[in-house]
Image (tube, rainbow, N blue to C red):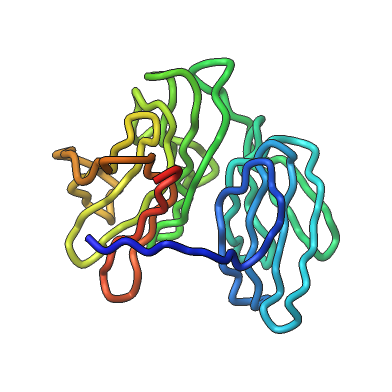
Length: 211
């Protein structure tokens, strides 16, 4: 395993709790959220300008929507948000397993399904999948659901529970979105695994908080 230490950040955005970085190829911009402040923010690569929108709710993550806007996972459910008009419409409410649960990191799979994790007291959180205008629990008994990604050619799904300080590996039938054979993939000696992604060469990257 190779470790990379970053001495200079891309941006000094002073977030309270930054989360869910998402590249929007349509706008040539990086989007992310500040969970605790209820903000969606963007960084325009060409102009190096930033922009901020206040949603007024805790936001766990966002995903690109085919209509040009975004799906936003807030404390109360899923909303459609258009940055051009600042219009936000909640179309699906969520009933969490525990009153202290909030959405956290999430990502869209190769079939266009939005997987969204939650965080809360140990054992109370879930990893949800949004498809066909409904949410389905795919993994329960979690603590702090975090970074996730799919190794499509290998039929493998990786998922981080930051509360357990563990990245788990699952076999997955990606077409049917069925998970099986959970095993421990990685536990760092120091720090907590947080965000996760797999690059075009199949390398797995994880951001280690306080590592």
